Amino acid sequence: MVNRLTAKQAKRRNSSNNQQQLRQELANKLPNMLSVAITSYEHITISPQIDDVKRFNALHTAAKSALSHIESLLKLAKWAGLEEEQPKEAENNKNNEIAEIIKAAKYAMSENNSGNNSNSKDD
Image (cartoon, rainbow, N blue to C red; front, side, top):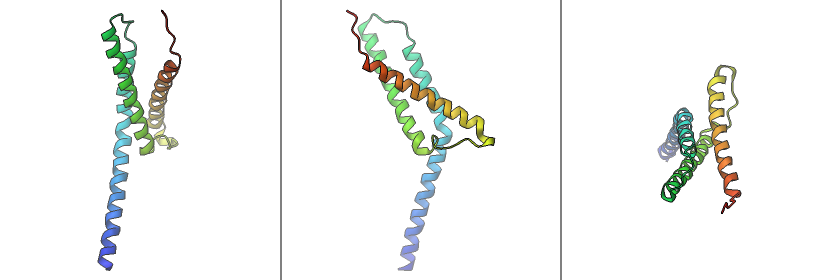
């Protein structure tokens, strides 16, 4: 019975280590992933005014998809602990860069939400 308890404890410890390792891997990759997603969203939304309905719908769908992707990455960033970290003196630059990317993503999300709330019709 002692061996079983030890095996269960080892399994829990291993699971905890795996989760911590995954969080660290995500923390390392997410800033770049967020940056790419934000750049994609900006590229889509900077497009000139489009008169073709099919093209407009395609770009609108692409923008919504990019925002959903950014939102998912922000949730992962929170889970990975990126938003909770306070910069230490030696890590200021990297943490500031991460904070700026997260801030830009949140701004893009808020811009989209405010745009959805003001659906004015120009007929």
